[in-house]
Length: 284
Image (tube, rainbow, N blue to C red):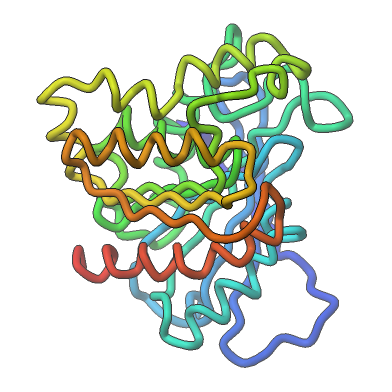
């Protein structure tokens, strides 16, 4: 199992409102990857003072981002604080893994949350990161209290992870997920291994090829997808909804007015936290 090397509280330059959570930036060692890996964690208000256990959400960033992108561009602390403070969402731990590439732009080699030659990120995530989080934080360590969500590249990975590992996640959600891949040129300009990993893990292809046993396993997960009507992946997401419906797998599907950008993802996050909280409460 990976080893936690550092936990440091993020410094806020803004006055916090009552009921605000906190952010930790962490570094862990990975035997599988052979190097250290960073991630961040949102802890809800009251975590430090309580002895209770919390559900956990793994929130994946889009291409070009890092473990800090949902904090800086996605306004995660404010969205989560507001949703929890209002009673719209349950208090939860939110883990922000890092799937950035090695180039200065954060693209290129090793980009993404899927395994590529010489970089078994999925094994790292399943075997090391999940175990470390459950050991280092007071999580409710069962699938009913564990969910995964992401935007764009992270949205595809969130759905694909739960498709391949339904025993690990009780819910999976995607915002503008790369589903169906109608424009492969948008992927191929970064790295061929990355592009191949996206195509090999396409959630739409997985559903279409799922046999009866796989379908029954998929039905044990709560699914949610949201993609804008002007997003270049809207057709793939709509087709994903129809494929899920044809197999009898429930999917909460949303299509709002919008495109592939942070405004759409920020405004879509609170409803996802509410959706997940319903499942967390039912599994308590």
